[in-house]
Amino acid sequence: MELNFNYSNEFKQIISQKELVKKYLVGSHVAGFDFDLWVKRRAFIADLINKSGSILDIGCANGFLLRSLQEWSKYKLTPYGIDVEIKFPNQIKELFPTNYSNFIQLDIRNINNISSFSLPDKYDFVYWHVWDEWDLSSDEQQDIVAQAGEHVASGGRFILGFYSSREQNMERIENLENAGFKFTGLLINKYGEEIAAWIDSDTNTS
Image 1 (cartoon, rainbow, N blue to C red):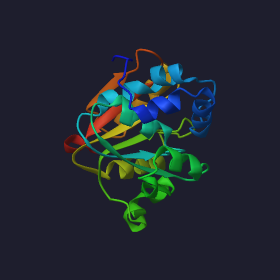
Image 2: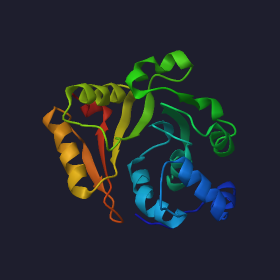
Image 3: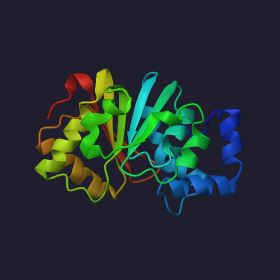
């Protein structure tokens, strides 16, 4: 993964302002990062984007990860996001002035109701940073992971991000594998502890 990106002029304007970047990182619930570290710890996710299409971020916060993925990926991505609580709606408007309506307040436990909010039911990519407090040995929470994966379109990809220590990340992935999830592959961030595991829709079982 190369960390030199051909950013759009609009994104260059954002990242040239340290206080603005700090605001967006705080709005993404990230502490202690500057933009360079953000790139090192999150840009690897873009390597799993293998075509243009729609992408749903579960737990999207202010949308800064999605906006960054649009810049890091060589493919065109149409962004959608859900979060249990939209704390920074103005930041979403700033980052996505033409796609603001693609972001809604919705608990992942109710993800099967997503189409009732005028959002698509299926996406080319569904990304979820599986929250650290989730016990993935729990049948209930495994079922919710499976439900999220059901919103991947045919030929699409379900991507799970794990941001804890390498050991904890692998343990959580193994819990899902033991529950019947068949991952297509794993991608380890060479600049940090993070791991992304993905399931291509044709192999998605649970």
